[in-house]
Length: 220
View 1: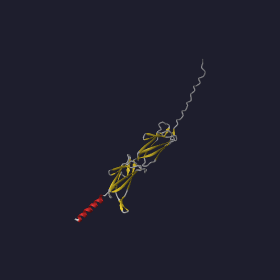
View 2: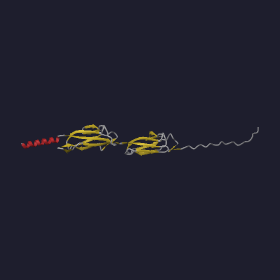
View 3: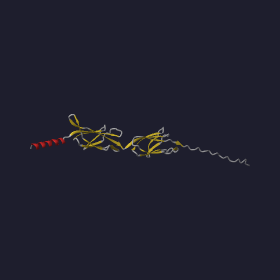
View 4: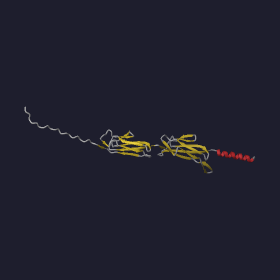
């Protein structure tokens, strides 16, 4: 009987040790492709959903056991993708500190990378007030120095058709010069240099009036 009771007590103690939960902490940090913190991003651990603060961080404090595997998932804004993937797993661990093991705090980092990039288009000409069109839409005009700037936003390798509109200046050459380019994966300055020449119409030669032949005096 003593042996049985001892085994029962040992079993209860073992069970209690396994089910005893300990406090763990997991902090999530989210930024964009330029390492700027992103706020209000949903982050989920189990059934708990919180959002990142102005520093791009969200902290979970919960109870668990060493060796448990937990899954963290994030939801990036529209037209963004998570890097690495939108979810990740980590195993809860403890380390020996002073006289007893303590839970190891976990910090995880994610990036929400925009699928579109902003680029700056710089148009240089020698003519003022020329419309600059992107994919058929006028976005800017050249200034008094013949220069124009515009922000171009699109996905990597997206094709852009640029054109300098000379419809109102038929004497300029070339007429309506254009440029097609694929947007690069990183922010860049995009240049479109075009010099114009003005064709002058040849002056019309004045025709000399023909003088009539001298007929001599008329008889009355």
